[in-house]
Amino acid sequence: MGYTSFNYKAIPKNPNSRGNNIIFHDFPEEYIVSMDDIVLDNRDETIGALRQSYLYMDKTDYNYIKPVIIWPTHTLNVIDDSDYEGAFVVRTIDERDVLCYIEKCGEEYRLWPIDYLIPWKQRVNHEELNHVFVYRFPKRNIKCFLKKEDYKKDLSKKCKQAEKNYVKYVDKKEELCNIPTFALTSPKFKIISVVKKTKWLTAKDGDVIYGSLPVIETDNQGVAHKLLKGIGTQTNYINVYVNGKFERQMGPLDFPKLFLENYKVEII
Image 1 (cartoon, helix red, strand yellow):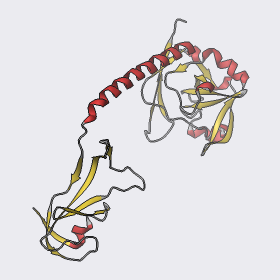
Image 2 (tube, rainbow, N blue to C red; image 1 turned 135 degrees about the horizontal axis):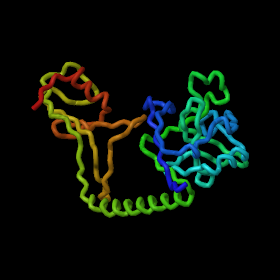
Image 3 (cartoon, rainbow, N blue to C red; image 1 turned 90 degrees about the vertical axis):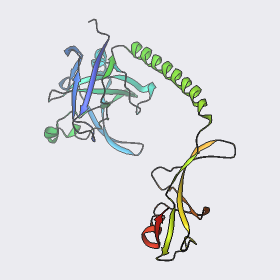
Image 4 (cartoon, rainbow, N blue to C red; image 1 turned 120 degrees about the horizontal axis):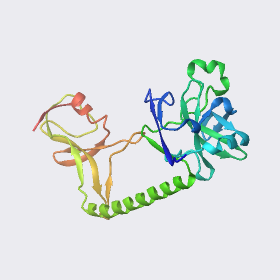
């Protein structure tokens, strides 16, 4: 045929959901497998904490599609390298060409389609394919090799380039030996009057208070650490100073209350 590779691209109509893609590719007809020519078995399974329906094909159907198996340069992290058997393109009953990844499972083969194989209006008549797991696919153009050897060579080339880039990064990272340490600091506020006393601070009329949120600090060994917390249960605590002296730490929800409930202030 003279082909060495093809390109496949799937753009989701709804970027926040799986499936329902607009598909583009340059595969010739001889590389498209009709759903009418293969038998798919749908099974409910639990893999890890995820319970889903998965598609299987037996060895007979695998041997049927084997001549048109391709090797996309984008692989799925849910499939171990030792079980990865490439992919193929199946034409659905509504004339969409869906890429299906293949995972060897004993004497059978589990399929990972990147889109639903049955249009939603017709799923009521095809319950066996109604809830099949659909993998989220990148929006970019994916090159698909026809030979596993070419896929492996391309993968090896990319790995070597990634290693070179990492070495360059490590070398450049040494230039960050003098990392700046800093904090996000509020303006300084002079207390005009205490509206409501609080046990949080000893500040009184005429005192100056401000808050400081550490971002990067250096430990005793000279190693810099980022201090801002991420999402979850961890909290960033604000260092509160009264007349230039550290008094206590306060949570980010409590510090604003000083100005909303306790102190009438002015910025100085």
